[in-house]
Length: 238
Image (cartoon, rainbow, N blue to C red; front, side):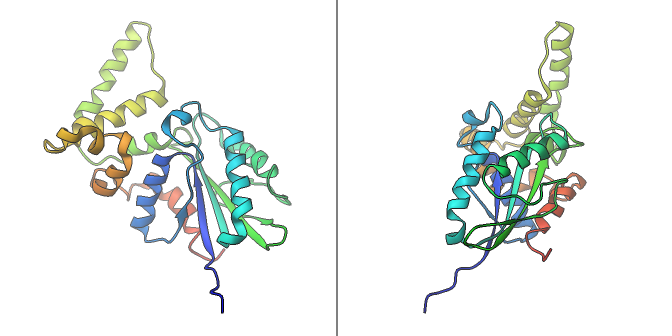
């Protein structure tokens, strides 16, 4: 008798670092949720931001494989960046509409819509936008949930003030990325790890950070309550 495939829940994420962070958070919560390959293949391709084409291609690939994988629920997690929540919802709806027959569209995050799949049954899809107070991305969240003294990284404030006094500027997005890089490289990197700083103290190998240095982040910070509510959708009956 052929073994019945186990029904699974799946998250689609924007980048490999989003995947590593969510894997660590899911492990902390003791949830059983699979995270699919990131929409962006590597950091370089993600520099120009998430594109409609990439998300549509990811969804089409998933649709072609959905019966074999016995997927019941799908979550889509992308950065809100500088967009409004309504703009991001419209973006997700546009992408989904190119792949799935939609009877309903998203009107908010962390709410399921049901999508009927030809020759399958139906699946539930929900979305979430990584943010801090309605703006930002993963690095914005990481900066807020840091647990260690961050003197090296915090001194960037003086550098940014210097730039401003000389009619130069750096975007919040780039500033947060730079802040996290310094926090990892100088504020939280042990003397021993500094001999392998790129592998053990940088975003280049963020998977190592999330597997071995979770104590440098506060997974109980209130800013994570919203994403935890979203993840809970995939482990409880809705």
